[in-house]
Amino acid sequence: MDENFCSQLEKIRVIIGKDGKDSDLLAYDFMFHERDPDLIRVITKKGNFEYHMKSLAELYAPVDAKGIEKNEDNPLMYIIELAIKRVYDNNPNLTEPKVILVLEQMAAKPEQPATDELTCEILNMLRIQLSLCDFSRGDVRRAINKIIRSVKRHYEIDGLRGYLDFIVEFFP
Image 1 (tube, rainbow, N blue to C red):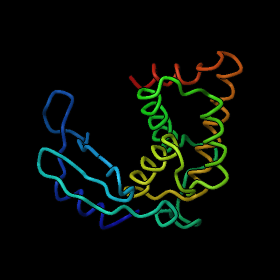
Image 2 (image 1 turned 45 degrees about the vertical axis):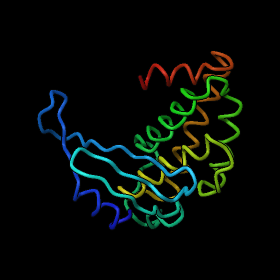
Image 3 (image 1 turned 180 degrees about the horizontal axis):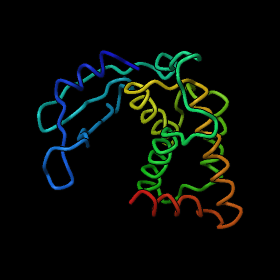
Image 4 (image 1 turned 90 degrees about the vertical axis):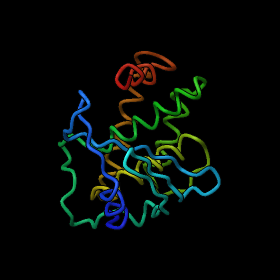
């Protein structure tokens, strides 16, 4: 977790409910700079700031930290799948073999430098999430491996874009 990032977020925190009244839903927009992949702009109705994000390797919680149990739902899966969906929305030519390839490379070394749009989007989303919450490298790898199994299962049953079409429905 990045305490400085969390502190900056707290200063411009805006909480919005479904009906426009205060509740527990936080409302932030995050935009990464095109030329500086470490620079993020955080925007709310209350204010905004720019921040140099730490690398994924710097954000991992220690191995002995309370992480995700093996049989527990892994919230990182949501973040990774949302990143995949965002790339698919902008690139309808994305296929599951490409998703599998990227995820398998990331499962081996999640903190690898981004060489394509999908890896970049996943890394950016993970960096935001790990800046806010403590997750270990093992937690990240478990989430990626679960998604790989899901993509392969959908690919075998539903074809070239079965998984991608599934997450489009899941993340409207």
